[in-house]
Length: 91
Image (cartoon, rainbow, N blue to C red; front, top):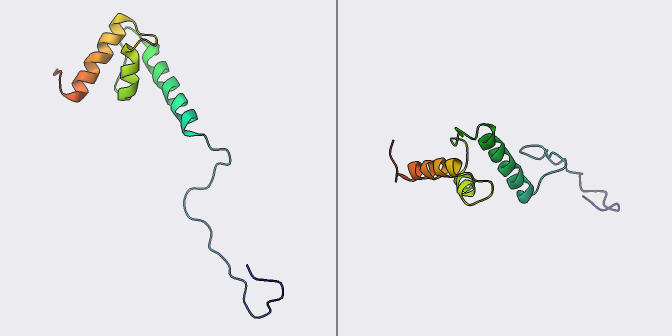
């Protein structure tokens, strides 16, 4: 930007910003994490007898046997899945 009295300097056209356009109302990290936890809980509790832990994060698995809403069978399956991911359990 130039001063109004300046008659010599040309006004420069700035290129458009690069990258993804702003959404206008971004979420905080805490809001995104809350949404992730809600999605993981919904996936697990759709079928509590045979939960699918393949899309659940390690933190989500730990939450399943740490007492949030854990039943014994879900907690045991979460524990086995975590062991499988870490290489402690095979099969």
